[in-house]
Every structure is written in C-alpha cells, then in structure tokens.
Length: 170
Image (tube, rainbow, N blue to C red; front, top):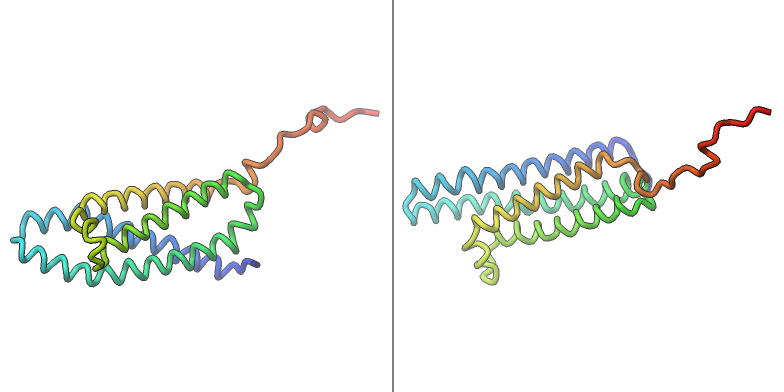
C-alpha cells in the first residue's frame, strides 16, 4: 500500500484526536462525574442520569472504536509497515498494542452496552472503567515509543570490524 501524505496526516490526526476524546472522556466519567453523582444524587436520580449519559456516551464510544480501527489499520499498513519492515521489536510492540486495544474495545463496549450477559461488568463500572483507562494509558505509552522508534533500529547489525578500521594509505 502506497502512502499519500495528506491522507497520512489526516489519519494520524483522527487517530490521536479520537484517543484524546475517548480516553479524556473516560477519565472525566470515572474520576469526576461518577463520584460527584454518587455523592449528590439519590439512587433514582443517579440511575436516570446514568441512563441519559450512557445513551450519549455509547454513540461516542461506538464511533471512537470505528475511527480507531479505520485510522489504525491505515496508519499501520500505509505508514508504519513500509518504514519498519523486518523490525521485530516494532512489530512485537505493535501486536501487543493491537491486542490490548481489542481488550479495551471489548470493555468499553461492555460498559456502555445493554447486554444482560455483560451486566456484571456494568455493575462494577468504577473498577472496569479504571482498568479500561489504565489499558488506554498503556496503549498510549506503547504508541509514543513506537512513534519515536527509529525504523529498523532494533534489527540493525553492528558494523563489521573492517568498517571500523581507519582507511589504508597507499
């Protein structure tokens, strides 16, 4: 797949922007809104607020997952893969990042979903949202390393001894 700079920039912006919105929103929900609502609202009011919030947040999470998948696969196939071909460390970390992202997508979907099978996750929303946030920060950390990793740095061979010798005068 050949890279096209304007699309590369747009895809990167969409990916990073989506991470800011979804991860920032999750941090706000878990550490600001949930404690404030629990302290200030009666149970019935709290449940009503939760339902209204989840109806909106569900759409944002669903759109965010779709944008992550589209922009992430484009970024990997068109931009990263050609630059890091044969770089084992890069691809191992990218694979780890992708697996963690799929776990995060599952948890985020379970937290905003309505499936009775996953109601246990929603009953412990504070705990699972905190785990989801932690996964998000781990993924951002891996992403930051991958962004600055020099292409092929981990697969470079040390220079041969003859490459280090001073030139012969003759």
